[in-house]
Length: 157
Image 1 (cartoon, one colour):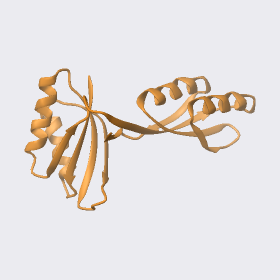
Image 2 (tube, rainbow, N blue to C red):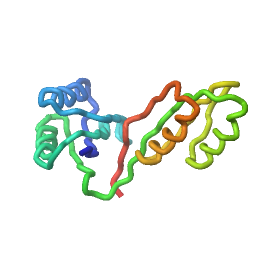
Image 3 (tube, rainbow, N blue to C red):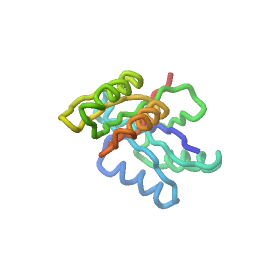
Image 4 (cartoon, rainbow, N blue to C red):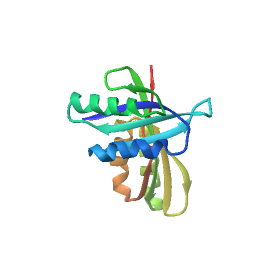
């Protein structure tokens, strides 16, 4: 099962490497990672999506994170009310006869074309995992040429 964990860390050289080493040494996978400064430039906010088959593994991950010196706070959003989002950029091929069909997909999903040429469109969408999945399924018919996703970001309600 995937779990979303937020970690406030001191914004210092090597913090991300130490966290990655912790996961790597124990054989845990980080499925998604997003890191950015907070309003305080000395503190960063990390949102991680981790694979943990049971509560014991999840608790072990949180305990190991809390042991690191540069960690300020670890928040597990698994059972807490939160809002999460991802950003996706998708490059699709299309022809002029497909333009109305592509516009229909964009209108239905809330995505938008941020650039296009005669045969390529770059689509942007922000949403939760299900919304992103729906968009990607709808765009398969045009032929997805390239795909880039940000890591998930989350905030408590």
